[in-house]
Length: 537
Image (cartoon, rainbow, N blue to C red):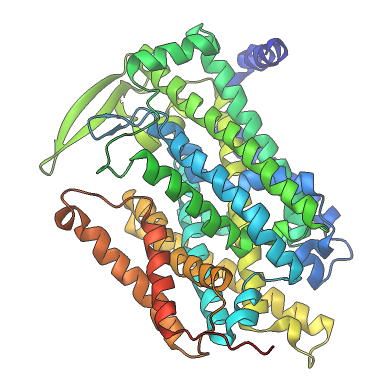
């Protein structure tokens, strides 16, 4: 801690130069960051081929994969939402550290991935994890699973991408007169350039770099605010407790945040959105040995728990700092609803800002803290974004090429022809990303991000049901479109149930467990059309 404090003091002692730090300098630093990524991509993609792109030639170092996947799991949305939620109101009290409930579930989910799913994937020597559905049930189940992944990952990745691009646009590019569409196109071009050759092999290294910068930025911000408040970590936690920011377990059974819902939901979210997600598992199965891949998953789970606690710690510190700067909670009536706000005066222009929720971290970092901390925030935010965006683009390309086009099974194409098709798909998905991001921009509704991310519970539910049915039963399914119909019907029924649960079940609200309900409906639907497997013995 002492060395970290000395390093931070060194950074802040250069504030005499901060008068010269302008938007152009921020922009130049971001460009330098991109240049480093391109350099890593060039180095790692030499002599690359399709196997390099899809599975990293099964030679990835498990320790690098484990650390780099922290950044993939924690997107830019997590970077601003987890700290911002600490001092937000929910059900008459602060959300506090309630996210730790979900984190406990994450640990359970990662254990299932390591000791149930990974042995299955390695035993079947899969490149795309959805090949399991083909070998177990046939082509229709296989294509259906891959399609649900493609839809979910496209929507989720572009939603996260939009959020971070919007922050960069507001704090940097708007001041330079750069249109939003140009910003989005440029960032996607950068992601495209450092992934289109090396694929998984490249992003294992770039994700490690980005996760390092993200975690370093997080730690520096925590230490700086502790110093500004002149308190220790223990004293900070004590003050957070006094303010009501340390709430963890929600014991209201009817609440969406009830602790059992959060823990069980967190476990199944991890199983579905990591263990059944080609983007996440593509890196795991690029490790040569099963044992190393399992160590990767469990190591990542432990490190991520610590990182998430640091994010919550930072959130509590940001709220304490804002209150120390004159911030005050206020209730505002909006369309008949009482909304809780945290109002503070911007020292730069004297305007009153509401910084509660997702606005907290970027607003305080860019308006109240020294420019060097603002720069660290921007770099850390980009580092939180890119592992999820580059991994999504690579995994979507892999899934479409392998699962939809059947590229690896094509004997009529040589390696060069397959590479051309793969590059075409990669560029096409980059363009689709751009279109989706621009659609979010046109809608221009901050709540659309939460709505789109909630859709993951609907799109991953059928995947959960399909894989669970294959693993937990020995029954067979007809190779027909009925499978697809069931996988489409389950999310619709889940939506109807979620919308009416409070009315039908005496105030009970469906929250994070929606994914489990969706998967269960899919499982039951598949059970109705299944047949007992006839033994050949």
